[in-house]
Image 1 (cartoon, rainbow, N blue to C red):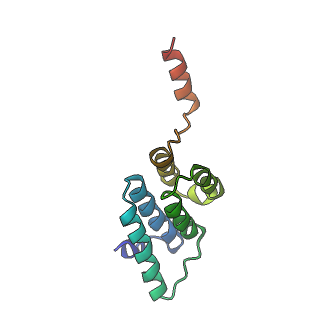
Image 2: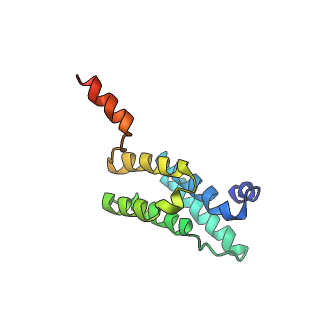
Image 3: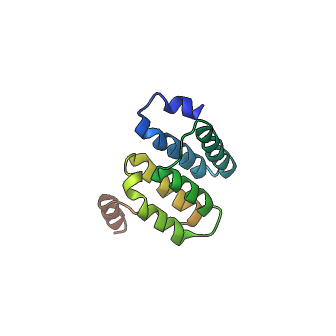
Length: 123
């Protein structure tokens, strides 16, 4: 179904459709379905003769493995290395912030404005 939905978008965005869905499931702490989705999409694409060669496809595999371990440094490394790809859809970076908080206790970095508000509210 996801691949059918993605077929209505640009071919170059197929990896975004898949990554968005996988990250959303991970953020909702639904690793079973996230792994199933990745496996099913991989099988369907291979059956069509397509190769999952996009950097985001590799990222999906790595992030699924990382969240099952206590591997905050690896999570941060993945986020850093794949930022150019993740920036193609700003919602992906927001979801990564949520995943970092849920699985690794990494607090999202506040904006300058929110930091100033915190500073003034403490007075």
